[in-house]
Each structure stands twice: as structure tokens, then as C-alpha cells.
Length: 74
Image: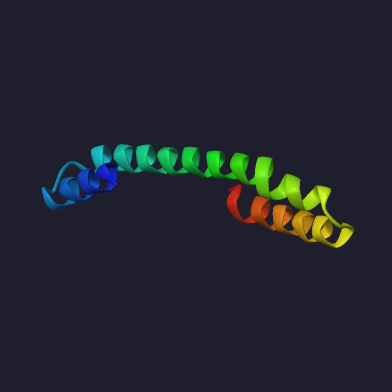
């Protein structure tokens, strides 16, 4: 949240475009790091539980994981 506010302040202060773009890259990387941790947690808990459950739950989880990978690995 602090990085986003800092980015907004840079835009409001009409800072140099290249500096703003560097900060945007920094924000993207921070969000990717959060996404990686969320995926790890989802795999360790939600996915593992579903895959160990019924065949139907496992199949639904496999589909969900494939969808997540295609949507978020860009």
C-alpha cells in the first residue's frame, strides 16, 4: 500500500517518467512475490486437501490449478 501511495505522489509531483516506471516495476515485483506466497499456501493447504479427498474434488482442483497457472503466469 505504501508503494502505491508513493507512486501516486510521484505522479502528482510530476516526477521524471523513467523514475516512475522504475517504481512501477518495483510494485509489480512486490505483487508477484505476494502471488507466489499465496499460490504456495493454496497448494500446501487447499489443493493438497482436495487432491487427497475424492476423485471428483481432485479433478476440480487440477482444473482450478491449471486455470490459475494460465491466468497468472504471464
